[in-house]
Image (cartoon, rainbow, N blue to C red):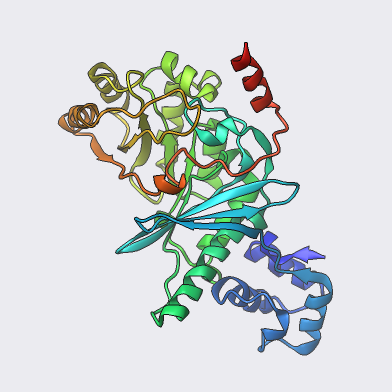
Length: 364
């Protein structure tokens, strides 16, 4: 039994040809499953009955089961999705007047253990399948369509995707790229490369692979202007230091759909938010076409860090803007339901035993 959500367009076409079907059947299936959100093969009325029977016998449109659905007063919506073996991931919808952005997870947990991230505190269980990744987009569009019908409103769909949920997307490269291809495929979701963003903590070799395989918008979780501090906050930096990472970003721009890299910088009180840090960051990024997105830290239990005061955030921003770095401050959304940046935790059966080790250390 194959899950059709695990196949991008070319793979689905190859599967159907192997079944003895015409290649154009792939286009029909992509439309039914991804554009129209239909899971029941009997309802795919322009398919031959014999083909629908084969699909019913040998295929499914298998989605993660929704275990929780919560909304914030600001309109942010978070789904908790069951991915089996007592693992659950979180997906967040961020509505704006001109767009609807979906923050998608790529792993159950995360192996990178960035110091200020709730997901990293949960440990790591496994990579998500392509079906579990693209299934988050399928569910979000399904729920938006249901809401529109219930309210008598025109149907809305997700317009932007950010791979900024649980996990490091580039550590699950093949499944993520397969999902990206479905997002970009006009026969499926038809999103622009400029409206799909992959965020990475800095997996340099995978950044190069993404440039050559499926270049979409790139965001880099930087969070520090020097290697000593970044080693502490983002342990992956010990493998790929900042200068090596920035060189990969320059190479990525050769094929990127945008003319800049987005650098994300979570401001942590008395850790990385001083004027000296800001000036050092200016020096690091001066020759990289970029935008800097400053993120006020979103606390979670046991974080050990605190949000920078507003005046510190403003001072940091002003130093960057004064040096002609395009800089924005991210508006916190969904923190009432733990859906803000860095707060996604879900439920993870931790194979790394990271939580157990930390609890034992804290008990000493």
